[in-house]
Image 1: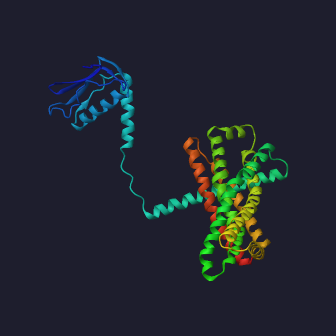
Image 2: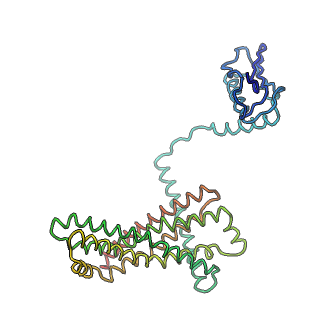
Image 3: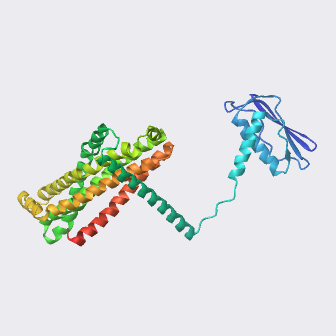
Length: 373
């Protein structure tokens, strides 16, 4: 029998002595100790411990000891810790204190008015932080145009490439598929009225005014906006932003300005590319699936789409690019000091950017229709 660890319980009148023998570690296999006592005699009034034959111990002994103490407390038996090693006594004290803190009264569910109040306070704080960050960006651009902003020119070229050419493959694929989807959706209904040719109008207007800029922005929100948040959040965790402040370098000028400028300038170009690729997708479906002649489809598209429609999409693209960069940089600068904070910042950047993009697109659409653009 393996006797590396053992537990003995001796009862003498009103005193219960629990003795720990041998090696009580997590590496000790097949401990021969009997099961813990399930109860103590009704006459017992005191619990003591004997560790004179205890050789080694770790958290395994602490777990068993806590079970014995809880059992004694359930029988209202006084506990004497003097027989335990000093280190074990300290661990036991710390464990019991933390356990006491955890065993607090259950939190009562908050009421409706309290939830509304908390949401209002959180919304106010978030709005205030966004307003402050917007002010910092405006001040940064004022320093940029007066030649006082400190940044690396290599950062500009890198972010231009990252936001533009590197994003072309995914923007091309998604825009092409969106154009195909618009063409098929239009064909289902327009075929009923023998108006297949108006698929060109649907795809052309849909891509130039709405889907081109919005899909490019949503793609970059998940691709580049999330990367901005992760990069700046990691710098917060590694205290690199604090180091920049210590050296007298404004982190908004050095980190945010290149990212935001690259995104705002590249987004309209990506939107134009997305427009043409989406129109190409609809063109292929119309000509090779719905038997519309190439010349007729081209002529109908040229009649339906004019520069005003492209202008509406480009105006949206500029604002969408700003929102993607703004949300990514804001959440990155707000990131905490842990790895989980970086993950939350990245997720929040994508969600916030997409919500802002959809809200802004709705507002622009309403306003453009109001002014006849």
